[in-house]
Amino acid sequence: MRRALIRLAAATAVGLLCVGAYGAFRIWQQGLQDDHRPAGAVVVLGAAQYDGRPSPIFESRLRHAVALFKTGDYRFLMVTGGKQPGDRTTEAAVARQFALDEGVPANRILMEDHGRNTRESLDAVKTTLAAESIHDAVFVSDRSHMLRVLRIASDLGITGYGSPTSDSPGDSDPLHVIEITIHELGGLAVYFVTGNSPPD
Image 1: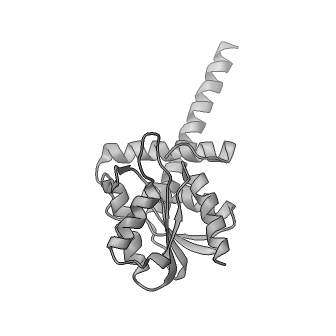
Image 2: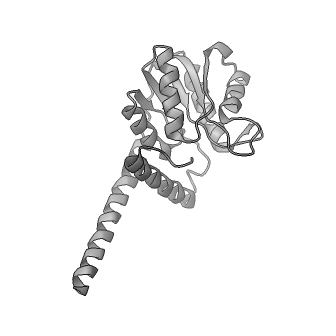
Image 3: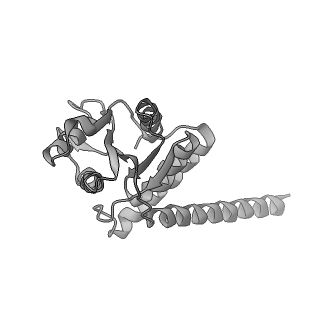
C-alpha cells in the first residue's frame, strides 16, 4: 500500500510538472506574438500607478497602446483599471491623462475604472465596447499576461488580438520572468477553476 501511494504521489507530481511546463510554454508562445491589426479599439490593461504616475511597467504598456492608436487603425483607445486601497486615483484615470498628454483626443478615449483584476476589467470592457457597437479589439499588456487576457476576452465573446509590449521592464531579468510566469500559471488555474482572476 505504501509503495502504491508513493507511486501515485510521484505520478501526480510528474503530471503537475508536465502541465506547468506546457502552461509556461503557451504563456510565452502567445506573449511573443504580435497580432495587432485594424479593429474597433485598442484596449490597454491597467497596472500599478504611484500617486498619479504610471509605474514603469504601466508606462511601457501605455506608450505601446498610444503608438498603435496613432496609426489611425482604431476608433478608440480604451484604458482600464481601478484603484487599490489607499490610492487617490485609478489606473484608468492615470492612463487617460497619459494619453491626453500624448495628444490623443479626449473624445476618442474610453474608460473602465472599477476593475480590480483582469476578469472584472474585461467584463466592463465588453459592456463599454458593445455600447459603441464594437466587437473586436487589440489588447495591450505584458507578454506574460497576453494568454490570459485573450482567453478571457474570447470567453466573453470579444474578438481579441494581442499586441504585447516588447520593452516591459523586467523581461530581461530571469528571476522576474520566473516570478511572473508562476503568477500567470496561478492566474490561469484560478480562472479555469473559478471563472475569476486573482488580484493583478
